[in-house]
Amino acid sequence: MFERQKENQEEKQEYTASDKAYEEGSKLYYDACKHLTTLNTGSILLLVTFLEKLFNNPHWKMLVAISLCGLILSCILSFMSMTNFAALVRDFGVINPRDLKTTQRIFNWSLLSFLIGIISLVVFALRNFYS
Figure 1 (tube, one colour):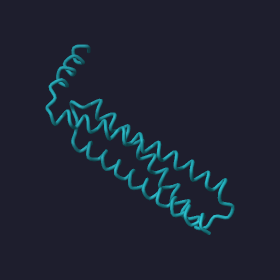
Figure 2: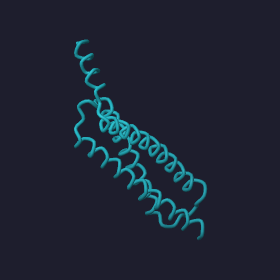
Figure 3: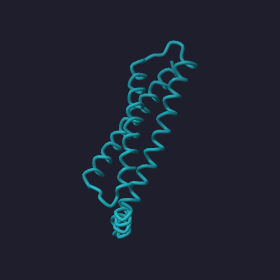
Figure 4: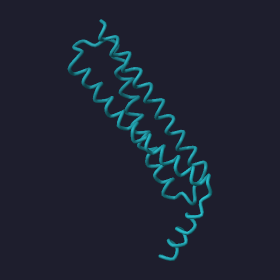
């Protein structure tokens, strides 16, 4: 068993420049997912604060639902991306390019749902601040 691990370590040290670039890119995507998850949770807390403290009779309540769903979906997709990128870095010697593309697509959907959630939150806040 230890010989197999040693062989795998030797194989992993024979990276090409593009292999190293993919590995570093996956690490950067992982960090971006981590930051996006932090932004999502902070935005959810901001939304709850808006509802609880600032607006007694809010207008356009549907934006709250859209924002909350977008932020929660983004948080879930970001977490899925983080686990996938971590697995890609762990198993980097045997990476399947299709797995990398799928994980990047999940991350892109996470970004899109985050933007939808934030835009809904901003429109909701502006509508209720100026009414």
